Length: 120
Image (tube, rainbow, N blue to C red; front, side, top):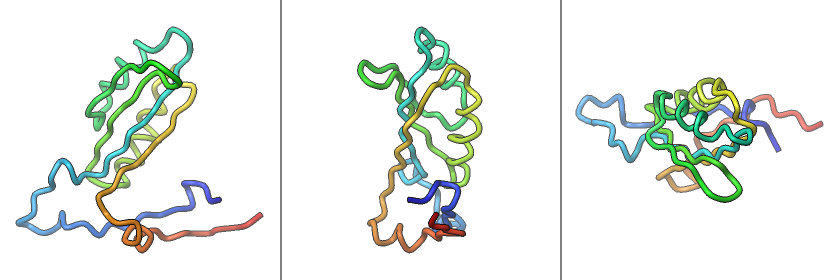
């Protein structure tokens, strides 16, 4: 299995076309399930809602404490929000990220380039 840092996504969207306006539903989207330190749910939720790109964030009952819906203009920006901005929020102990797509699986595989894969 490769780590996320070994995958590079290439963009083949129609956003550069002057007559196309990016539909909010077609933006790269991720749902992030977060666990926080005990008692820090409200603080983490409040900080999460201030992060640019976080469209929704809610407390949960169950295995995870918070769910967040994150949208960005590109996969690169989505990755930056998840790995840099959300990581800066203190009191988060773990997260599970699920990225959604409207494209069929075979189109996605054609867009992913595996770089420097080393089997150890």
